[in-house]
Length: 255
Ligand code: SAM
Image 1 (cartoon, rainbow, N blue to C red):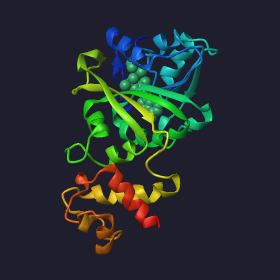
Image 2 (cartoon, rainbow, N blue to C red):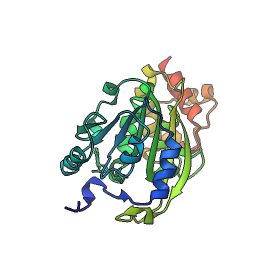
Image 3 (tube, rainbow, N blue to C red):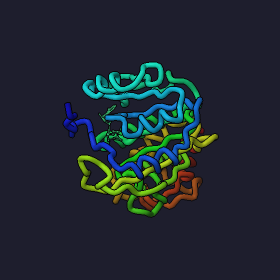
């Protein structure tokens, strides 16, 4: 029986074989890679990936889809975890993990935050996402797309937009364009693990009201003399600060 795509699970299935080939080529899987796919759906990426791999792990929330996958693939080659990727502990799969997925758009931002916790054990990640989300991920300071997502991800990952995917490549077709992004964890994250909480609080406060100046948004964190020490103008907005300047603020406050 035909599977009717479920909107609540962000089900826009890839139907363009050329795009599938381009994504698999970008991932460049090899036999013994430890690879996990988030949201395998009907297997558009799963099937071609398995041609290169000994085994593939997948996390899928839709039980009907899981049933189909169990019928279509051997459990020796496809290891299925039924559940919410937002709650999945990716560190249980092992180290040097490769993460891939045509991500459900409705949860892509929280999923990226969830996954960034596991950066240490990850080799790389390749995702197909809404183009606007990728623009926010890779944005530089003073760009209107630069915000909390850019800073929080860029401090842990090097990121690159690889190519654009048009709406017609999916069924049902989404309203917007998509893009494939590659994320590689930095060997040395820009922020030390014990300062991450403070860093995150500062970045969130600074961008909570992005039209306001730092003097306003960070008044609970920084005094006038702190700005002098840090050589940061308190009259600027969060969108003008580099990732390195946010790091410098967190380090200054942790001393
Ligand atoms: N990979 C398939 C493809 O490219 O055609 C399907 C991609 S579709 C955009 C997103 C997939 O993620 C669906 O299979 C959906 O059921 C699954 N999904 C949605 N929310 C999820 C969640 N929270 N955890 C795990 N999988 C989820």
